Length: 150
Ligand code: FES
Image 1 (cartoon, rainbow, N blue to C red):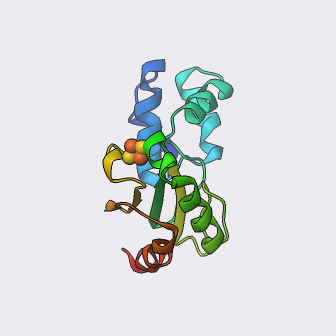
Image 2 (image 1 turned 180 degrees about the horizontal axis):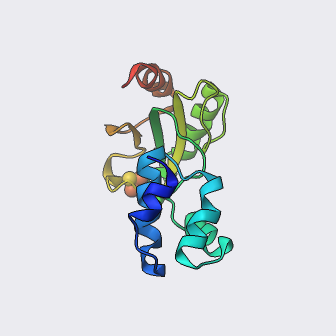
Image 3 (image 1 turned 30 degrees about the horizontal axis):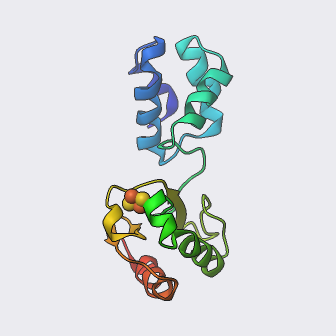
């Protein structure tokens, strides 16, 4: 689906911005930066207004994501139990900082700020599968499974 077709199916008022961005992200897996100008024009907004919404809402991403998403919780409960060490270990093993995707586009490493299961933290989620009480020693096996995940 191209951007023009998505725009044609969308309303043109400011309240249509977030639903429109969701549709674009659903179609492309991310919001292509080159679509911002077309979205702004369609909704009679400035490009900086569209960019502001994209930046504020953590759900949206401007960069393509990998097929496998590894999310490491950095919320308070997970953080005090060593969540910071988990994300550092993942960054080291994958060779990318959190927020980036591996060069082969297979895997994206992300941080979250509470995944709603604080009692079993530190928590890592790989494409919907939760790993609880994660220690740095478990990082290798989690990443091995992540690399073969669909
Ligand atoms: S702080 Fe990690 S799940 Fe809530």
